[in-house]
Length: 108
Image 1 (cartoon, one colour):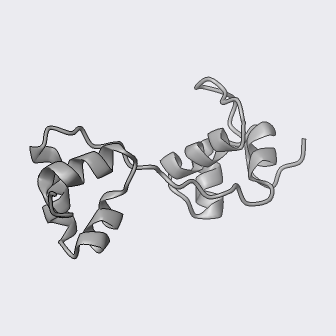
Image 2 (cartoon, rainbow, N blue to C red):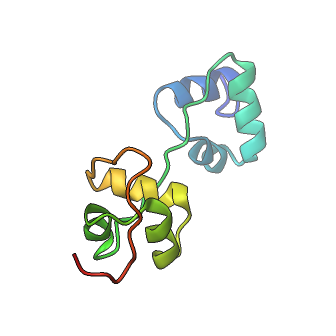
């Protein structure tokens, strides 16, 4: 019977859905050892899941009223990429580029 920290056993557990962190904790080995063992066994690692926070109140409304992603990001303290991900996660359909500038605080 193979050891829990055997590269083939680690690879099978990873392919079955276990996370590298879980395998490291279970075996008492380092994350790097587990990762290297799984890669050496020829397994392609799954892409990391990006955690996307919920949009703060008013963010979607600002975008729908014409504010740019950069303007919204600056207002809420998020990067352009994070703001864009949050809007997409909230189900917003993004506009094309080159729209008329919008001033935050201006009523339409």
